[in-house]
Structures are given as C-alpha cells and as structure tokens.
Length: 172
Image 1 (tube, helix red, strand yellow):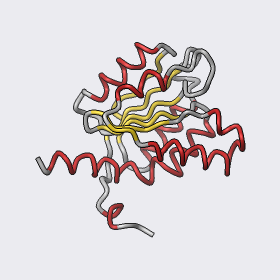
Image 2 (cartoon, rainbow, N blue to C red):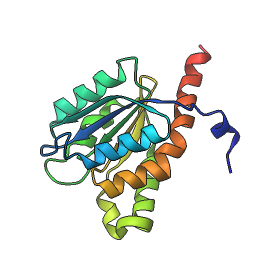
Image 3 (cartoon, one colour):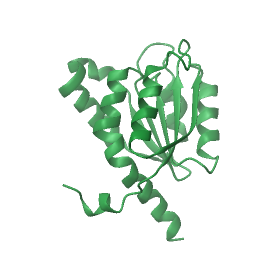
Image 4 (cartoon, rainbow, N blue to C red):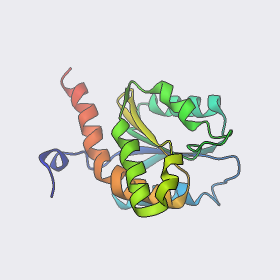
C-alpha cells in the first residue's frame, strides 16, 4: 500500500556509492556492485563510485566532498560499521550529520536479527542522517547486509526522504 508521501516521492535520485575497505578493488567489490545494480534497476543514477581506505580523515573528506558537490542527493557508504579497531566509518560520518535518523539503524538491526544474522545484529552500527540537503546511509559491507538494507529500507524510502529534504528548499 502506497502512502500519499510515497506517491509524490522523487523517482530518479542522484546517488553516490562509497565502499570503505582496505582490501577491495572495483573488480572484487561485490557489495558496491550490488548497491549500484539495485539503484540502477530502480532508475536511480549513480554519479559517483569510489573505494576508499578505512581511514577517518579519508572517509570524512570523501563523504563531505560528495555531499557538497551539488550533484548528489543520496550517499550510500558500505563497510567499516563493525566493532573492530579498523572500523571507523561511523566515527567519521556521524559528526557530519545535521540531522540523524536513528530509526534507520534500529530498523536495520531489527530486520538483520529477524531475516539474516540473528543476535549478531547487535554488532552493527548502521546509521543514517542528513547533511547539506543530502541523505547519507552507512551500512555494513557484507553483501547480505547490503541487500537487506537496500531492498527493505533504502529503496522503498530514499525517494520519500529526498522529497522531504528538498521540500525545505522549495519553501525558502
């Protein structure tokens, strides 16, 4: 059942995909490719794709540059959301948020528990927020987590989210 909000949601979103990994290449990045495939299959555009190292400064600068490019409406970062020493994506991105959307992480962990990995879902620190009229998602880098986040949450809501963010701009 479509809500009124979804009926008026943006249909074609300009997206960035950023994979955080010290080991993946564009040839081996299954999760980044999965995100790109799912976005393009839903008629969204991927205008930026990069694999970057697990480095706080590099992650922060890449996301910030992307968000302030004026060309991107949604950023999907995958990888570096766990609890190991090298997992610094959340620490890099969270301070950038003007608004945080805690329901995203809560729902992702609930669905992960229910459909995918059971109690190991407590290790996920997936987050979402808004910066410079751009929605930023940070999700785990496993292909299963990417598929779950994209199919169950991001794809159904990203158009609605972008519309809500841009509604602020239209009213100014």
